[in-house]
Length: 511
Length: 81
Image (tube, rainbow over all chains, first blue to last red; front, side, top):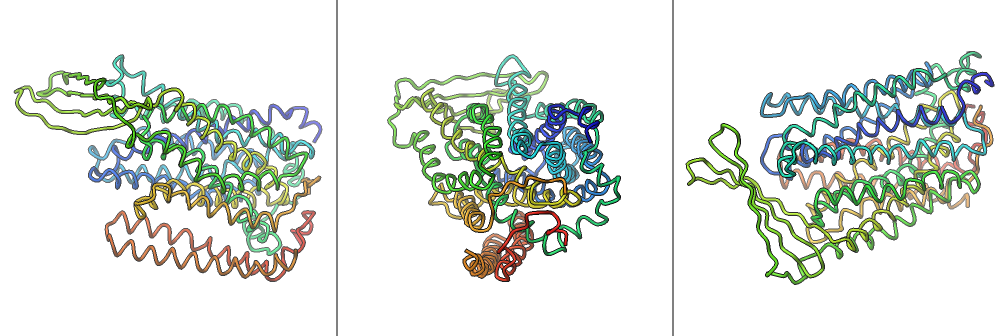
């Protein structure tokens, strides 16, 4: 074991594991971040809500298969080894992401387009289901007992950093396809959205190179050398009562609540800002980016702190804060961005028209942007795009978009409100890898910890934006109704965690 | 504390059955109100994926009622035996 450790100092292990996991998260999240554009490309046009829901359903499909990925690759990881399993998940994830960027749109190949996208999305979900447990197990099995929370917390930063990377790549691509911003956005929505998917193949290639140089986990190598690996990890994880009770406890007492807090703070917040508060696309993303940048170091802080005070109360603290403060936070987000009761300054209203000839075609596109200025500093930007035929008499209005540009003070207040939500995320998520690793034995650890993690995050968490939007369409008189889903799930998880979990740090994960 | 853990087991069983029943009722109502492909697919997905989770919560409650969580394992041997 010492020889292996010399070849693989812990920093190298963390770096190699984290980079690959970060890229997998990037791959997974670009799809979610581009949901409305993908809806327009791959699903039959008509009702835009139906198109968005279809995409979110595909998004949810990506999450639902994650637990199956956890079982399939967890079994492989417990039988064949951690290293080769999470190399395989990386190849599958990179390949399917790249392929999504190649699928022709619905208008070109009909229903084959959404079917192909769905299939590739399912492969992404399977691969992700196998990745995280492997990386967390691998790092934890290298870590000394008193630093397990600290070292595994670096893996915990990767999900958020993957989201950050996906948002950054999307924003940069969206702005750099043409000199004129409106033309660049049009190009992005037409074909440029594919670039972030294509970029994945380069990132995955680099990560595979790094991971190929890694050694197998010393604990797993020892088990394998002694012939003590599990012959049927799924059966041992789920059919043995003593282990099944810990899988259920990990799910209902920790990962279920952690999952909804994660997806509320980092996904539903984005959906809410853009679709309910009507904040501009770019501002919504940069607000989230700033909040993530400020909060990310706290994953490591809480992971490190959990080595001293235990995992349980930090996770439970995050759940409690989320339960009691979600509604006030979202109410503040609404109040900050409302214009309905604010006086508009009519004298400042400004209209801009840009006509873009469509090179050789019998029509041009006319983009009309109207700016309304409100006393609280918000600018409402309404853009309508019309098709003008060269005969000069016909005009077809194709689409109208409305967005609110918020001034600096509101912008930074929104950053602070999202930051607070991500602090809750860092509390529940920073110590969770160490917590999960410590409650399962080495020979079935990959399978056992992956399943509650992906049920909690994939099913409960991943469905959060989808269920919240759906609740909003059923109970239309309360715009905050969607929050009752994460609040209820986090509250039940908090109660179960407080009563049934222990705060003990396992000194020995080598058994 | 152990008796709280035990009796709450019944609460988890009830919660699982009640919440899944509400989900099923809502699924039927929503599909009847708007029987489009989108609605049927969305609500059917919910009903299907939350079924094993509801069963898991029933098992969790049953194990709690039987006292399985009175003492949590402190070594892997206890889990494996």
